[in-house]
Length: 242
Image (tube, rainbow, N blue to C red; front, top):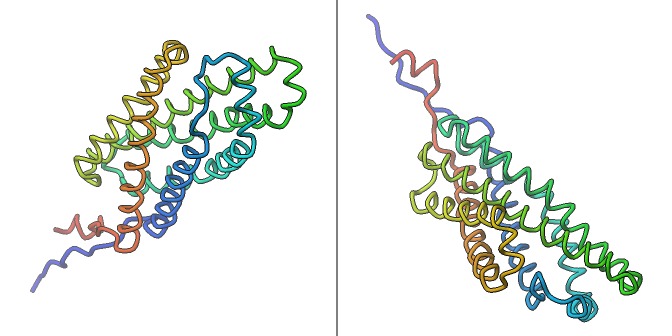
């Protein structure tokens, strides 16, 4: 008498890593909100140099703390990116590779951007006597910052498309990620306009800064949940026998 073995269910490879990535994502969101609070009241991107110097002197303590937190945030990104990549699975197709690349670019762009701000604070007494050099550092920091925002947009937007295709993300979360991606890419493409238009830049960056933590927290919670109780996948050999 012949019989057919019932399909065997196994956990997705790498599922044990998902809670690590989820905790990294929650930490990244929390640190990002603290950084936003510390940097509240920063002058416009095209502010006169005396206004920039006054801000750097008066807020040097908070800016130093913000710089340290940015450097602490950057090492979390590989954990988040790899965790989302594993979680989305093969059904996400090449979109998850684009998302992985996008978040890797945040690390590559973010370090130089934060370095410019760190140098400005570190050498502030010298830079006060060299306004041209200070202008260059301030301007580089601004443009690199928009590059980091664009990289976030590419990563989040691509991961959201991948989440939609794989069925791992709820539709609302994928849609939110696509909106974040569109805003982030606009920041990169429209950087020439944004650096000279205070109201437009403030509105766009405020939208990005409010939406990104929501997406990151929601995705991180799902990573932790599915890492503790991973969604079962049918074993390939068992599936072929059915």
